[in-house]
Every structure is written in structure tokens, then in C-alpha cells.
Image (tube, rainbow over all chains, first blue to last red; front, top):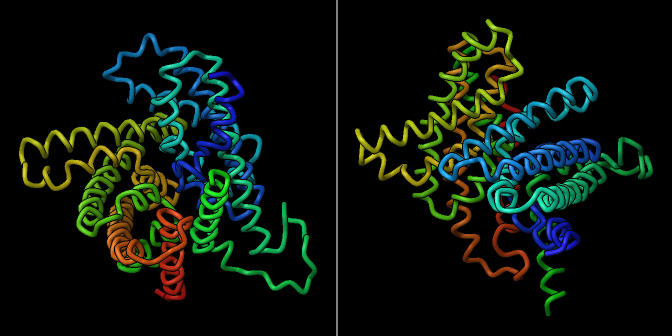
Length: 198
Length: 191
């Protein structure tokens, strides 16, 4: 498989949120505003790519029997790095994302890519896979959070984009909105991919 | 905050799934039948309570005294993974009946973010030991309530006549959203 295919696979065909539906907790929780969604997406890209690189480099040294604990420790180390960096340099975002930054460690997406890709492929391919899956995650986060912020607040990046007479649909940024809008988004993706096939 | 209101708040008002979004993966994955959902819910109560006790003690006795708070994430996930493994082995030997009932769900719990999430929340909210325990039991009970109710709803939804594109996870998420609206009603509860 060439590099471009690996990348495109992550963004579209096997999009982690919209198609595979893994790593939903943080997706539902932090997409109340576009900025939070993008912040979380970038944090996941960093952890995913970092752990893919290290796991791919170590794949000849890690015995098969203990690979899962080894993956978890490597992922936890990268999560801690991202956690400390965000605490130091983007404090407001760090507070908004809260418990969901340390929870990147149990994001099934990252463990799944370690097991399914990085442990079996070379470093360069693993970097491309990490970036592709990460960008796919980011795209889905942007879609979901922009719809939620637009409907629920009438803003994008905190800037008003609708006239003042717009009455915000509060439900969109409350918990139920996360479930309903993501459900409809997945339905739309299903519809589009079915139409493409037909 | 008194303990009873903390319990009710953590179980229902701030329901772990409908308002905190922790544990959404098993919630969507293991909710196709009511009895499997109940099995998962009970296994989660068991592991969350045990994990909270141990992580709380480790945090206070080791990480805080040695000033190693930055190792929290690594430490907690290792404790949870080891604990789940240990519980599995223990149940297999001493309580085969319970093991049969919970067996298949136990390994899945390691990557359930509810377990790590509750352990971390107990620390960041600076609960006392007793409060942390009440919060853990309440939160995991909330998980059981949510997943069993949702399995019941899903049973009906799966038989409904729907547009092809909405079938499966899409309509499940919308149904979860509607249930979340119902739980939003509890947020007005004054305790």
C-alpha cells in the first residue's frame, strides 16, 4: 500500500469516529466548541503519532505475550507528555478539556492502531498511519464541534456569525445534543457512502 | 456535601454516561441485550469500586508523599490493568459461577474510560476517602442504570422500520440523546 493510500484510508474510508466509531467518549464530551474540538484533535494526533513511532521501532523487541501492557505504557508516557505540555502552554484549553486529556490513554483508537498497524509495519508507514487516523479524528471533531457551537451558541471560535436575533438552540451544546448530532452525522455519512456505491 | 446527596448526584443527576460521557464505548458496544448489559454493568461496579480504593491509597500514600503526581496517568492505568487481570484470575479460582457471568466483560473493562475517569475525578475533586468511595459506587450504579435502560430501548429500536442509512449506531446515538434529555430533567433537583 503506498503512503497516500494509508493516509487517505485513515481520513475517509476508515475514519475513526464516523466509520469505525471508536474513541467516542472524548468526542461526545469536548465538542461543545470548535476550539475545544480542534485542541482535542491535535492532542490525539500527537499521542497517536508518537506512540505509533515508538511501537513500530520496538516491534522486534517486544515479546508477543506482553505487547498489550507494553503498548499501554508507551501510550501513557506520550499522554503524560501532552498533558504536561498543555498544562504549561495552553492552560485555558487544559482546563476546558479537563479529565479527558489523561483519558487519551484509554482511547481505543490509539491502542487499536498500535495493535493493528504499528506493531506490524515499518516506521515511515506507521507515522503516515498515525497522521492519517489522527487527521481523520480531527476532521470528525471539527465537523461535530462546529455544528454544535453554531447551533448552540450562534458562534464559531467564539465569534458571532449569526444576527443577534438568533435564539441559540441550547440543547446542541448540552449533553443530549452531542448524542443526537453525532448520530445524525453518522447517518449522513452512511447515506453518502451508500449513494457513492450505488 | 452530605453523603446521601453525593450518592444521588453521582448516580443520577450527573449520570456518568448521559452527562459526563465516560464509558460511552461499552455503553454503545455491549447494550444489544438486556442481560449482557446487566452483566457488564455489575462487572463495572465491582471494578470501579475496587480500582478507586487502590488508586486513592496509591495517590495519597505514594505519589503525593514523594511528589510524583506527574506519574498519575501511567500509575493508574497500570493499577487498573493489573487489577482487572487479578480479579479475573481470582474469580476463576474461587467463584466460578460469578466468573462465568462476568468473565467475558472483565478484559473489556481495562479500556473502559469510566474506571480511569472516576479514579482521576476522585483525586481532582479532592474527595475524602469516604466521599471517594460513595462517589465511585454511585457513579458505577449510574452506569448500570443507564446501560440497562438503554438496552431495553435499543431492543425496540432495532425492530423499527427505519431508513437504511440510519440503522445501527446512528439511530442508537439519537436514542441515547433522547434518554439524555430525560436525565437532563434531574439536573433541576435540589439536594
